[in-house]
Length: 332
Image (cartoon, rainbow, N blue to C red; front, top):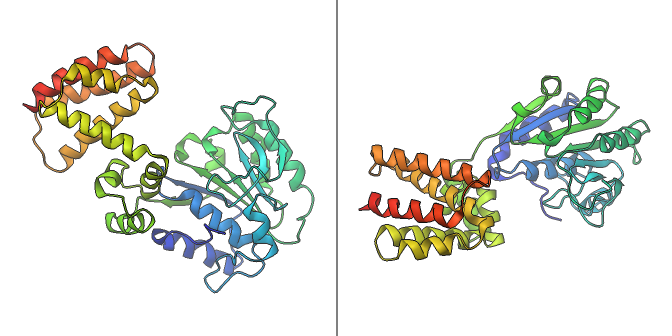
């Protein structure tokens, strides 16, 4: 079973929680926050496994072989719960924190994913927490993404946080802690994850994906798991293609009108292209490249174009034609 150890740049956070547990001073509610792709879910998987493991090692990491670890691997542990947009499920050490083979306590009636974490899912969880632990040990509840809790869900969980069941740890995982209700935030111990150093991130990324490069990591905002996800999904190849198209237009090696048609062909990707374009300009500025008032104006146009695309108030091809024609002049 994978995912049972914290990532290399998470040593300080791991030391903090394991030391608290060793002192019998482990807080019952934690707010785990950080940018997308820094490894919050990876840490949660490792920590949940360690809390439930029957035979943790000297570093307080899960063994991966006991009955508890085996049940957790496929979402079948009765004392490991996940609250998410899909309902109240069994927590799993899968990257998505859930498994198709896992326990399912309550799910929305609709086949489509809900926009929020429903209060009925929270009520289902609370029904399980009023009884004692099935295996006599710890219980772990993960709420992810915590920002998607409806107000009713947050209010329902507040009593559980204020009067926690014995041997129960609640982990609220989010990119945006400020989006949570103050009543939730104030009752949680904060555990923040910063973007790792470039050296740490690249070392891990090259080990996981030898075909990675520093530019991809930079485009991912220094978040190694985000860059790794792009490599796994094929997003990195699409990004390289878009990047090359923009460069070809800038160097007058490609017709901007044809390039606009190519970039606008898949309307679902048009916003992603503009975000990459924006990131490329920001990297240029950060690295001390040429920048002028014209660059500022063009960057503003990119942001406005993205807003209009997301509001469905723009024709993607016409937008790309206008931007690419100006882009070619800007790069001249």
